[in-house]
Image: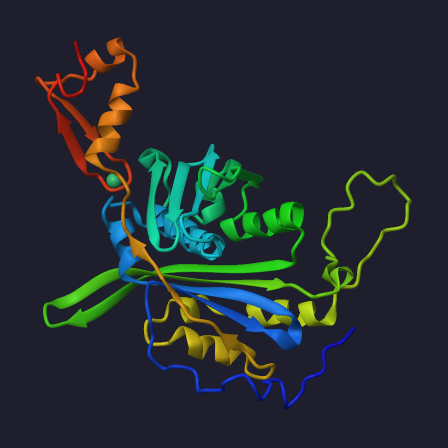
Amino acid sequence: MTSQPSASAISPETPVRAPSAVPVDDAVIPFEVSTLDLRGRLTRLGPALDELLVRHDYPVPVAKLLGEAIVLTTLLGSSLKFEGRFILQTQTDGPVSFLIVDFRAPARLRAYARFDKTRLGDAMDSGALLGRGHLAMTIDQGPDMSRYQGLVALDGGSLEDAAHEYFLRSEQIPTRVRLAVGEEWRRDGNGPKRGWRGGGMLLQFLPKASERARQADLDPGDAPEGSAVHTVAEDDAWVEGQSLIATVEDIELIDPDLSGERLLYRLFHERGVRVFPSQALQAQCSCSRDAVEAMLKSFVPQDRSGMVQDGKVAVTCEFCSSVYEFTPEEAGVE
Ligand SMILES: [Zn+2]
């Protein structure tokens, strides 16, 4: 089935307005291109991303990789209902051995990366930084709901590759993802100022007739030699959607002067794009003195006594670097 371009792509009951020229940072914009059965989300991150990355003084390649993981998490986690939690983690054998991004709906983000400085090169791409291992995505919708975990193998590819693999194998929804992170230099009254920016787009093909969602790039697997290769023709609407998202440049995703709405309009205006209200994002840790104290008390007594140094127990939150100090009595050390 082919979707025809049409001048009446926007139905009369849809309010039509010009795309906002005002860029909004730290937000996710859901959108829809109904003439192509496409749905998506666009993330733009500025100050919140900078706060998450600068807090740890990461080397540039590590900050960029963690930034990409944060952008990906906002694209995937922002569809959760209130109170839900989405956690993206990687565990791999590369210089960056562990990444975690914790998103608590509707807005709170925290993240950190563990890495080996001695193994870092100057211009390593995300695949080389991660190495081999796996990526896990956990969705926790609260105590009354079961936890869901999806796993994808990481095999030297990027986080974009891993997201594609995940949607192909687990969700079976035709999906494309773009992620970009960069450092911006701006001159203000106090001289040049640098800051991290990130942007990303997720595009999904969700036709009403499920047979239209067949995907071409399924691995043929262990088919015996000589057997006919089963080639699948992808739906024209999805072919068009993929070619449109492929034209998005990194700079467009992170450009502080290009509004998200303008970017969406630039891409999809011929087909008619509908933009829904954006969701704000913020960098905010969820640690607390009470939670750390409860965690300490869950350890066996001999472990607790081993934590006393200089007459106190100090615990540092790995996400936000907050330090919580307790007297041995408070920490339950006998
Ligand atoms: Zn914290």
